[in-house]
Length: 324
Ligand SMILES: [Zn+2]
Ligand SMILES: [Zn+2]
Image 1 (cartoon, rainbow, N blue to C red):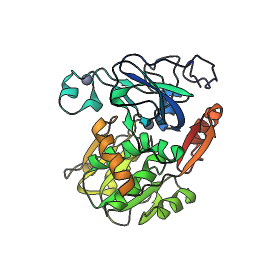
Image 2: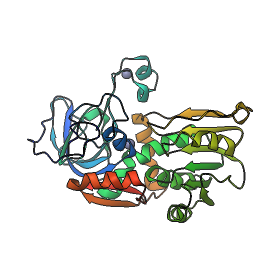
Image 3: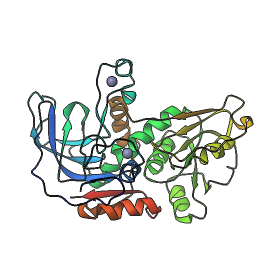
Image 4: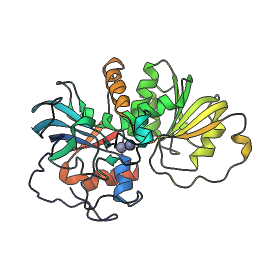
């Protein structure tokens, strides 16, 4: 499913199966999650995508061809391909443990072709080996919603009371990790979204309400997954002195001006960008320990536009996954 130009629907295109170059593997896609970032690519909210582009960066499948020089992965192996497609390895960020901030990166489904397809080619060094058993559809959302959820939770610090704004794919995984860590989860949804609030409580949230509501007690930290800048001052008002607000999305509407008073007292605002391979190594060890169970809605690959529309409208509970 190909995006020819931003704003246009994806179109089904028949192409020869891509061939892996040196250092690459080809994955036969079993499932590919639909991330909000895909919506930002399709809607033209992210600059300079490769065009035409095959979106999708939550790929689960098995390797069916290996390029030259690849020793760590084998044909038949079950793997996941995430958003971070390649980094330069040389810039100051790559050299200092911040490959997520690389100056010359490639991103799967944005600046290189991704997983809304039967086959995808990936740089072998950025592919995660996955356990041989496991449900492909249930695993797909872990590749971005899970990983970014994990990174954002780390960056939020070790506070006990965690607020999650926007209870979609990422929050429903983050909530499970935070509960497993023994923290209290406060879930904020759109006003009147009773289904999402019930879903959050089912996953162990101690409180769920509208994002306009104040939490019953001050939060230690808050993570904003919804692409809504107005939530930044809202979340600042919800955290205690010294509390931290983490913006976890790649794109957000403008943040309205707010009184200094709500940032004062050493409150912090921080964004989360991309992921590192180390995030993946840590997170995939935690998945079985925390018994993370994703809630998914699967669509045949050719109905990718419908999946994107459902995500855009907020109709989804959990994560959308495409199956070729
Ligand atoms: Zn770099
Ligand atoms: Zn994503």
